[in-house]
Amino acid sequence: MLSILTDFLFPPRCPNCRAYVERRGDFCDTCARRLAGLRAIARPADAAAYIAGIWALGHYREGVRDLLRALKYQKKKGVLVQLHAMLAAGEEALARLPDALTAAPVPLAPERERERGFNQTVLIFAPWLRAHGIPLETILVRTRETAPLYNAAREERRKELRGAFAVAEDAQIAGKNILLVDDIMTTGTTLMECARVLKRAGAQNVYALVLASEHI
Ligand SMILES: [Zn+2]
Image (cartoon, rainbow, N blue to C red):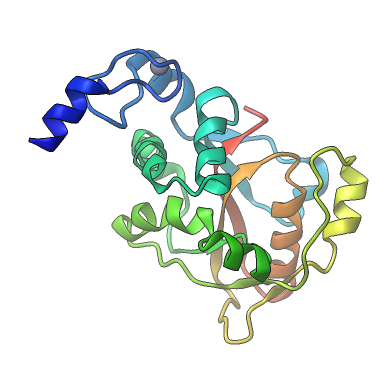
């Protein structure tokens, strides 16, 4: 009853272009085609030694950017409906991911996670990973906060991130295929530094899956 009333007062709209849609949380057909679907991303040359493949489910722009900002900075967990819909839209491409994976979220600095109350990457990926039998484990920890890197050059980012991640004390990763998950990929330096730490600790292959990338 309440939902009928809500739909009448606030008809469901596409979170990207605001077109009317049938079900709350759905993207319209045009945006679903344009924004979602698993895509392989070219690895930065210096990442090739550590990361065997990178995939993204959407482009980090417009609606997707707004949804991620609402989740992270306004703590609006309601937007998870749409973000989970993006993962569902990439479903048929799941077969392209390698088998026998253990997922590892890119960790936040402990102070930031405490302040935010959650790691957005875990909230975004946990249900999807669970549904596909991919265990999500705290394999990586962040050893220190890093300076905001939005406008930093690639080399500067790499330097700032060096040593910012470590393998958790009780993590068993020798010989495992690890799927790094993160909300956004910008230059790929964070994923690369995480992958470097994992490979050094004995991981067999490291892959990365991000919700949205600036490079699609
Ligand atoms: Zn749309």
